[in-house]
Length: 93
Image (cartoon, rainbow, N blue to C red; front, side, top):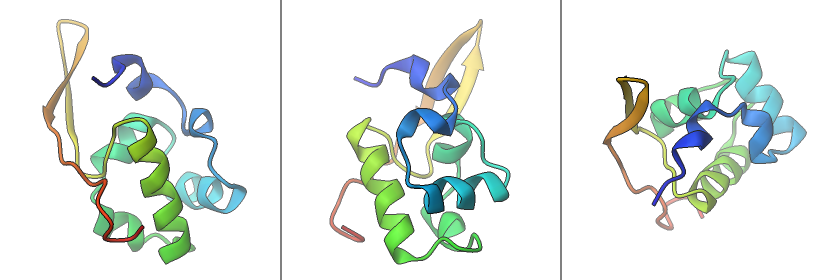
């Protein structure tokens, strides 16, 4: 079960390396919700986000039960995960 509060957190909460954090911030990603809503391919296209950085981000998302490409919506003040893609496989790990 995913803790719904994680989506409102800043990416600071994830404990990313400086390189991964800066890569995401420079791309305009500031919240966990924004991060999980992008597709893995889109993240790989961010300047400075090579395979090592992508692998790190993916591993951290998996630690929280999250993945790239999730569809998140808010209804009556509650966050609802509309589409959950399990990306915790060994593709980049």
